[in-house]
Image 1: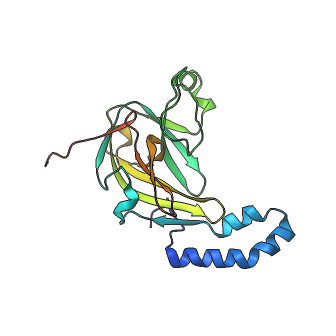
Image 2: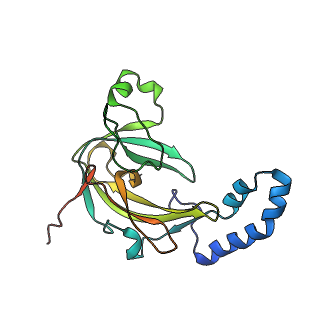
Image 3: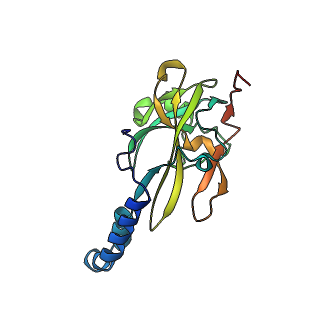
Length: 198
């Protein structure tokens, strides 16, 4: 089991979370006054969807992509502690990609001037670095719906072999019926590497 998904579950387990939440929700609202938070916590789920083609959206399972520009390597922690690739903001330009992990409107100049002010930044992954996408997860809860998160492996440079979250290098694609929006590569950030066999 990956360190990045410590509470993987399937539909049966997700149903159990829902049942517990329905039973306990009234008591939590009365006792805590913040039942929405507890309901979300009780019904939270993380499901590995890597073996289901439809969840890959505009990506291809196991395919290799190359970075079109330099990106941040950021340590992030919410439902798991992990390393995230996220775009570097350019002065005066709207940042490309998704913002699942916040806007991260830091410029390279700010970071280089005072790296100690950005302890969450673990480095910069350079333009031209190849990334192989390896896993896709659905993460959500009864009270806030779900989203797709995409993981991969760095194939080049000083971070070679590192598992990273590449969700923020994506754009939203189609929405699944009664499900989350799928992801597709943002061409300003990632482009596919042609398969040499094709």
